[in-house]
Length: 307
Image 1 (tube, rainbow, N blue to C red):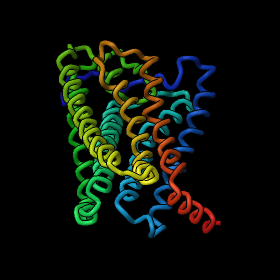
Image 2: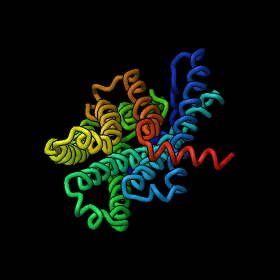
Image 3: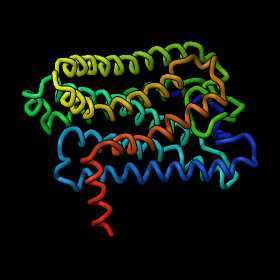
């Protein structure tokens, strides 16, 4: 990273430009954050405690919930504290770290969702080989690869953003340090960095999405060959929750990142960010538990035994 920058801190605009709405929006996001945090922690605890859920599908779900807890915690508490204090200053290096951690978690979730699609594909398309291929070692390796790949992409993304020259103004039109609003503040030409970031990010997102699509093509083709309607529904129900999570993640993530910085709209950017950074992590526990009887039983055991 360059040492040319004269900016030592940034000012985050927060959740709203209107002072009278800041307290209301802060309380609203506090409620959503607590809902997401408690929901995902409950999933982690239920899967950990219930031996019946010690299978690959729930191992991946536990890791997904952990990622959701991490990347919401990276941005939301800081934004709420700043809003309540009335001081929305974040140091340059705090901003660098926040962007790195957030991108790493999001990218890792992208790769983890692909691994979960592969798991469901093997379970339905190759059931006889599933137990051999999807061993505990294989599950651990897929999770490690997801985290490692996320970290590599985050290093590139952070360097690509902060290698630009920032000399002022230093007001980020967002409630956390995201690359698009930061690049708009650069005093140097960000066109090349923008294009490189767009190309690399697009390849990663579309590549992971393509692998997920291939997995679901195989899943659907296998389900279509099942003659019993009940059997088809039972097979599809094991991956319907994951498919919902994939749609939520990719739709909001693509809207946020698969567009040039020059087309960035501050208001639209904040609204989209609310979906992929707050609402999607809070909905994932609901999506996975609403129609999953095993998770419902495990959660009941968890809360009953804790009384």
